[in-house]
Amino acid sequence: MPGLVFKDWCVPMSSTATSSSQSTAPAVTVHRLLAGQKALVTGANSGIGKAVAIALGQAGADVVVNYVADDAAAGAVVEEIEKSGSKAYAHQADVSSEDQVAAMFARMKQEFGTIDILVSNAGLQRDSAFHEMTLAQWSKVLDVNLTGQFLCAREAVREFLRRGVVPSVSSAAGKIICMSSVHQQIPWAGHANYAASKGGIKLLMESLAQEVALKRIRVNAIAPGAIRTPINTEAWNTKAAYDELMKLVPYGRIGEPEDIARAAVWLASDNSDYVVGTTLFVDGGMTLYPGFATGG
Ligand code: NAD
Image (cartoon, rainbow, N blue to C red; front, side):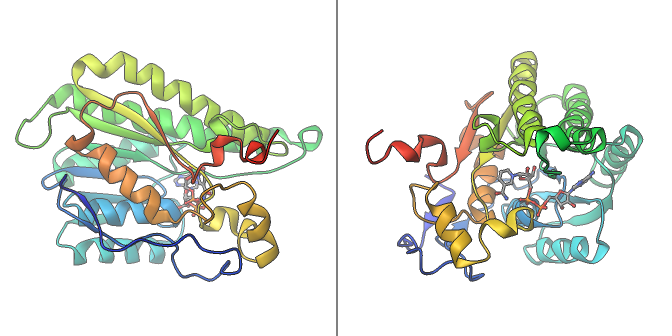
C-alpha cells in the first residue's frame, strides 16, 4: 500500500519514560499522496493542527495555516511546510466569526483557486464544575468547537458543490475532516461544555456526510484520545500525571500530534475513498473501557 511505510517499531513506553518531549510515535515516511490538492487547517499553529498542516504539506498539498493568535508560531508552520516544497501561508481568523471565516475562504480562493481538503481542528476548553459554569464558558466552547465547524464546513461545501470532482486531483469533490474527541462518546465530568461540543460534532459530521455523499463529498471525523499538546499539559507533564493517564490508555503510551496527522493524511487521500461519515478513533484504545481489562 502506498503511503505509510514504517521505518521501525516503537516499543510502548514504560510509565517511567513519561513527560520528556521525545516522541513516543514511530517514524514514518509520508509519500506525496495529496499532490495538487489545496488544504485549509484551522487552529494550525499549535499541537494537532500544526502537525496536520505540516503532514498535509509533506504529502504534497498546499496549505492555509489558520490561527487566531501568535503570528510567529503560524509563520514557523508555514516555513516548515515550504521546506517540503508545498506552498503555504498563514491566515488569522476566529473560526466562530461568520465574517472572518467567509473572508478566509475568499482569500484562499484568490490565492490557491479552490479548496480540496478542510481539517476543522480549532478547539478549546473552558473547564468548570457544572453548577459554577458561566454562560460565557459554555458559549465560548460551543461557539469555537461546534459553530466554528459549521461555519468552515459550510464554506467548504459551497466550493466543493460549485467545482465538483476534478478526477486528475481526487476521486472526491472534497474532503472534510472534523477534529472531534473521544469525548464525543466518553462523558466527561467537569467538562460538560466540551463534551457537548464534541457530541455535537459527531452528529453534525454524520448528518452532513449523509447530505452530501451523493455529490462525492466525503465528511469524516477523527476522535483523538490523549495527545501530547498544550491543551492538556497538566495530564502528562509530570510522572505522576502521566502514570495516572496511562491507566486510561491500553496501548501504554501517550498519543503524539503525528499520530493524528497520519490519520488525517489518510482520510484526506483517495486511499480512504470509500470512508464516508465515519469517526476514526485514534486513542490507543482509550474507548475500550480499560477499567474492565482486569475483570469487571
Ligand atoms: P492546542 O491548544 O494546541 O490547539 C488548539 C488550536 O485551536 C490552537 O492553535 C488555538 O489557537 C486554536 N483556536 C482556538 N480558538 C480558536 C478560534 N476561535 N479560531 C481559530 N483557532 C482557534 O490543542 P490541541 O490538542 O492541538 O487541539 C486541537 C483539536 O484537537 C481541538 O479541537 C481539541 O478539542 C482536539 N482534541 C485534542 C486532544 C488532546 O489530547 N490534545 C484530544 C481530543 C481532541
